Image (tube, rainbow, N blue to C red; front, side, top):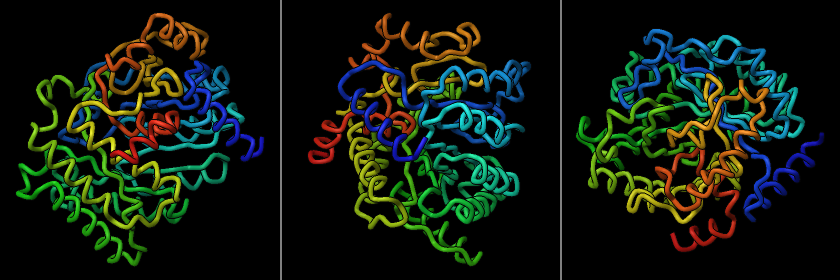
Length: 379
């Protein structure tokens, strides 16, 4: 189908979701593997590979193809991990959805940037074989020394910069981002979070300049706020208290987001800059209150699939809904059952753990145009 037709279908289904019509979701968050060679101090996904049987029973490529055929309505897929490119058949996984989902418009995956050659080759192949828009986010969580310590890999910063530059050359500036998560950095580096963000941005551009690469603008630099989830990150038990480092660090994160909001945003599309503005506005509200004014779209326009076929409402809520191996790989029976059982109603009522992770925030912004507009004006 033509790109214009797919976009019009997406807009129609998004408006239907905004009206509360419970159709098929447009977006899937798919954990393709828990393999990961990072050793991040704030995420325990990487520990799964060292657990007996931890990587067993992941969906095979044939099962992924069956799932893609059974859910051809999907239009936007976040392929995540672990490190997605650590899955040997990662390219074939994405190609399976490209072949079976005629309206597929957007494919996104984050990467730790460690294996530059493999990441570049992956992106180059996908550019040639997948018709959807490809978006890649490279994770960098501080200047070189701090980033390497937080992510547990020597020279991680250098590898990530090399991967960012290589990917950007393949897919273009607009679709390549740096993602920085504002965890409890400041206690170990003697800087405020705002200073740390500034220093990280400067360090990235210094490294790019040293390589003769174009610099990034603030529009290519996305700030994430930390989240905790047992079924996804495996880090809930380690952060059973506030999880953000207490109210003072919440305020520091909010101040950093406020400071970057004032920066001139170049290097991203107008639409993306608008979405980012709403994201930042509601992130500040979430940090202060634990809530946002925008209703999450989990089980309405978004869904989540684990590497072993388990379906959850989202990346955060540890509430299993069933396994696609028991439904002929169809997603809708599990989503419809969850809706009938009141799980979606709990999300609307704010009885879920509540979050403002980009995986759920961006679709929620799109599915709540009026509330998003109000949040933008009043935020």
